Length: 288
Ligand code: GUN
Image 1 (cartoon, rainbow, N blue to C red):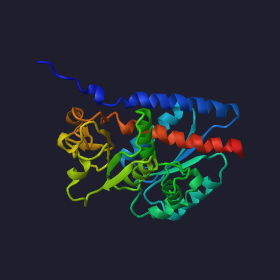
Image 2 (cartoon, protein in one colour; image 1 turned 90 degrees about the horizontal axis):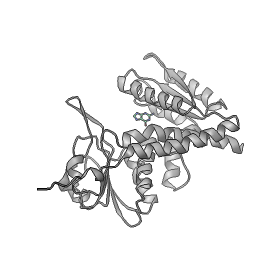
Image 3 (cartoon, protein in one colour; image 1 turned 120 degrees about the vertical axis):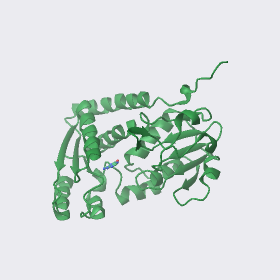
């Protein structure tokens, strides 16, 4: 008996990211010829190993792409006012293009005041309400790194979303809400599901494109997807020392046209999307 190989339905995200990096290198070279080196400021105000790993990944890519990076590693007795002062200085520093506060931050800090104090023009993370509002208005804006990375995948697969039904599972400000808006701006019809949705399967089974950012290992099984659907898995769940996505990839690949893997999927795109935002801001210096 012959068994069909479904691995061709699993998206090669690494290749997509390599293409993006190639594009970015060219843009960075062009800036360098005008004596502009993009510079990122990273503020780390927590003591989590996971956040340190994320910050290390950001530093590594900055180094690889020859952009500058400066880090503010803050102790757990840091005050909100002190962080606001640091951000104010970075906002006013013309050599700094992008500012990000790695999340989460120490619980005693005022997260909203801190994030909102970053100039929306230097908001590489796209978390500022003004950037989220611009996205809602279908205006040019900084888009958060995970939804922007998902957009890379959608664009490289040449998907025409017009009139298609897109179902997003998750409504976070960082992923679910912005990706729903991005898909809406691409003329898809949107359903945003979340933890209070009754009968999730009813919606996921209808989806031409299904984006899952629920944080629940293997939530989406083969029986929950439509034949020929495109499935984007944003989940990164640690279970028994393994990393699992929100989608049962190997089984879903038997039914979907495309499914992104975990690990090696959306997670690979996000830091590149961050540098893309940083370079976009630095390019504005050319127009000043
Ligand atoms: N923590 C988890 N994801 C992110 C992200 O995209 N940006 C920041 N600043 N913190 C995070």
